Image (tube, rainbow, N blue to C red):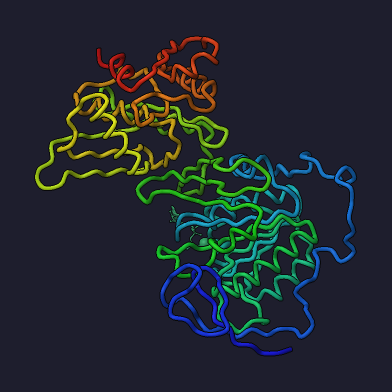
Amino acid sequence: MKQKTIYSCQQCGLQSPKWLGKCPDCNQWNTLVEETVTVARKGGRTVPLRSESTPVRLAEVSASDEDRLHCGIAEFDRVLGGGVVPGSFTLIGGDPGIGKSTLLLQAAGSWTRCGPVLYVTAEESTRQVKLRAGRLGVVAEDLYLLAETSLETVLERVRELKPAFLVVDSIQTVFTAALESAPGSVSQVRECAGRLMHLAKGEGIPTFIVGHVTKDGSIAGPRMLEHMVDTVLYFEGDAGHPYRILRAVKNRFGSTNEIGVFEMKDVGLNQVPNPSELFLAERPEEAAGSVVVPAIEGTRPILVEIQALVSGAAYGNPQRKAMGIDSNRIALLVAVLEKKVGYALLAQDIFVNVAGGVRLAEPAVDLGIVAALASSHLNRAIDERTVLFGEIGLAGEVRAVSHPELRVKEAARLGFNRCLLPAGNLKTLDQAKGIQLIGVRSAAEALEDLFN
Ligand SMILES: Nc1ncnc2c1ncn2[C@@H]1O[C@H](COP(=O)(O)OP(=O)(O)OP(=O)(O)O)[C@@H](O)[C@H]1O
Ligand SMILES: [Mg+2]
């Protein structure tokens, strides 16, 4: 064994033999920190996942989608792509206090249906976890708690217990004695995650690790870990709303951008199987500036309300603020409304909000944003049983989007009776029951239909 001093960037994980003021990789200043690593003299790092591994024909590998375990919370399983894959390694990131431990403890409780679950709590004592379990109503005979921060002990206990699932809360607080750097530093996080992954793949134990994300990202954790793991889930939410969204941002076993919706209650997280109803529950009636769009999250359509407020700027530069939508997109759509439809919006303050704390990233909501802006500008409400979707190009044209049939179906299911959609999509759709479909070619044509 040999001691070696290296400098590693806490931002991106770059390693350098000497200290540098600025990381040449991620260009951040003052992020290189001295770390001591002990290296085994003969390349111990190149151990294969299975020592007896030999090439096999693809056809001879026995694995099918039926192997997935379906013993957890349905919304959680959905985000993972329909159940947990044996041996998969999943990272769950999220802001402090958003409910990561709550979610995993509830999930661990239901996973015990498949066998023993080991929950390693490196941040809290077993008593604290017990109190939380009491509050959440988690009673599981086969749920084992281990308050331990030493990775070596964790690995040993896992080998003894042979659990069906392993949870490590959190990866920043466990550390290995093989490295001298502090828990939470890049090399510790990388080494611990690497060894846990080795265990997960080797023994076929699905493993879930919690990773912290700090505001300025000063602790290199999840960002760098994202490359190593099979699945990255983000647990998001807004402090002002009880809704929490579990979002897959990387998934080797399913669609990304699949979401699971939960509601945080004092008795824990409740699944929300019909998010559309929830997001529309508080919709104001006959209000100008409010419109409903059928958005697609992963494979699931969700109806959400977009609100816009256009009002004369009091002084100085007009403000453009957006919550839940990229503000550059709003700037573009305002410019289209100016130039192609002829609205005078230059001197107006513009605010756009997606109700319920949802984030919309797909361009299919463009037409909805334009309609909400126009509705607020004209101070005329849009018929409350109308929905609309479509991408808007710079020439003001409405372009076809993906999954029109899912969007129309979800809107019809919730009692909407008119749907404005891209003419290009209308051609491919059969007339649906109970909902009138109107194809539009341009933003101006859509607004003409809505307000005349
Ligand atoms: N007694 C309670 N009643 C209602 N809600 C509670 C109660 N205790 C905790 N919560 C909710 O649970 C959240 C904390 O959950 P949890 O500890 O699972 O978060 P976390 O993401 O694991 O946080 P950390 O990053 O600190 O580990 C709180 O923000 C709060 O909303
Ligand atoms: Mg926690």
